[in-house]
Image (cartoon, rainbow over the protein chains, first blue to last red):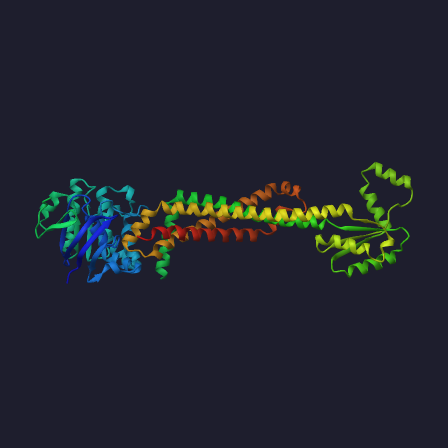
Length: 227
Length: 302
């Protein structure tokens, strides 16, 4: 049973076809890298998985459930099962690192005792326990991205979407984030990583799906960046 | 459920505290809007009561010939009182009229001299009639003119009063229309000011709302703290407005009252402080809740 199944997905904006008949699936615990030039539709594909966008045609299944037909309250529940890590961090600016991570548990209705137990643990895992009370404006880009990963991890998601997570980071922080994603994947969480970073793609040796002109041109296990 | 409510309240408190400049801006604009709203309440009181005060001053006096005995006048009074159009009648005897006149002429030497020259009491007994409705004075005068006691009368103080009465009826309608327009305008303005301030505040936080949605927060979890913030801001603004008004009326009340002593606007405010505080708070709450709900709903469709 696939964790994610994109079935004949097409997406157009104002008549412009961005994605054309995309079909692929992702198994539980798999690590997939989406590559392609800017504007090829990688982000759109990820946004469809958290129902920020809807496809023009086709169906998307998550755990065998067609997520294109979810009601608003079901969308909220879906988003609690999928962690996301974006290039622009998307942290709540008036909450501390601890509160940003705790917020993801609060929205899912976890009791305070669970929040007090789990949040410090996850912050420790991403090496942020010392800046737990810092606000985003007091953090470096690497610290912000690790906070985002901690927030994505806290609900023990089955899938994490990482859209150019290293786009705003220096080389040292870039590799720290990549290592963190590998570690999370090894613990059983499936990951879809969208990136243009050739070095990362080529060094990971994971499944690579290459997009060009809105279509999948290559889908290889232990693939390389060939665009 | 209780834990969720606690979280909503805690998030609202954090929002107010951490976005303090935004909160101060919202509270200031709400205060301005509530001052406008309170001015509307005071204006409404003034316009309504000004007409009543002026109408209460209107009356009709009928003067009797000097040889008519007091018993006859009192019988006429009782007869007139049976008329549905008449609210009250007061009798002023010849001696009482002199007493009133002397009192009024105390500071007017010319009048005193004239009175001394006449030697005896030149004044006549009279009945002072107040109608239930100012529009009915005409009918009362015509009824008196057709009555059996018409020949006992010396004069009906009618002409001057009739002009005042007609003018008053016209003015009272104009005042009612004007006050309705001004009141509607003030309520509309105060509503728009508060509404847009809260909308702007929420607009500045639209990215936060988007993030909350993407993390999986349901609409009520996001909406709740903003509505609570709107309520708290309205309550604080209402309290500040009330304190400002109390200070204004305590400091300048005497001066304000000297313009319209019969209406005593400061006494009205101080005697009805609970009504003012309640109305402001209710208005603020309605605007706060409506504006927060409308503004936030716009950003919840992510």
